[in-house]
Amino acid sequence: MNQKQIRSLLYVVELGSIAKAAEKSFLAPSTISQQIKELSLELGTDLFQSKGRGVKLTDAGEKLLPSFYAFHQLAEDIKIQAQSSYKEAYGTLTIFAPSSMCIYRLPSIIDTLQSSAPSVEVILIHEPYDYQTALRNREIDAAIIVSESIDHEWENLALYDEDVLYVTHPDRHKNTALTLAELQKSTLITTEEACSYRIAAERHFAQERAFLRPRQTFCNVEVIKRCLLTNMGIGLLPKCVIQEELDLGLLKHQEVENTPYQFKSYVTYPKNKTISRKLNAFLQAAKEGT
Image (cartoon, rainbow, N blue to C red; front, top):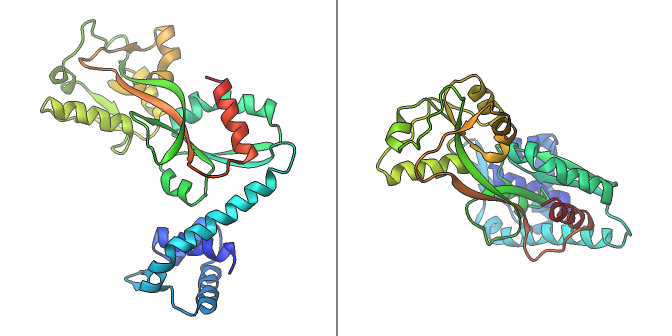
């Protein structure tokens, strides 16, 4: 039994198919199938059964799944402990962050990290991405998230207050705070439905027995900002994204009753696990940058 077999098995469990697991791990489907077959033979039991076009765990596989996760996590901890014997942090650090954080928060952290730990290479992953499953499976080292509250499943290092504002072109700006009924009549541009900013806005509308009906929806905050700069409507964005444009007068904060929506950014990483030197260096850089 080896970690490659266990990792492949966990990918198949997560994605429900050998083909998808092969794509995620950059291996041929035949390689994944062979690894699962060898593992099943060694354990003396079938681990998967067919389900439609995919596969699912057998009863025996379900019973063994917690042990497979523990095996994988123990192997990762052994690597981290081995690397801790080196005098300086080194290696690849994989971080998830939404596009707004990638552009407006991470550069200063990475700049500090390059000075304190020059042998650490940062790889960024952005949305759409299931960072929580990736953290559990040790596919990423940490995530930078924007949230209204702390998720106690993880360790969380607070970074910045992240107010989310309604913002618009100066020619469209109103000097008085809009009600939701007035805002509802405007051309609204928002992020995608799963975004925490959008969820906060939808909840706000629902409390007033109204509905958020955006005219345009984009997953990239830069696209939304470009639309606002061409006077296409009123957008919902974190203040850090449009701070420069606000300072220059290119965009204006459109006041709306009971806003801005208050969020906080965090570095989120696994709880009760050995912290690698490279992750510790990243956390120290994040602390210095805030």
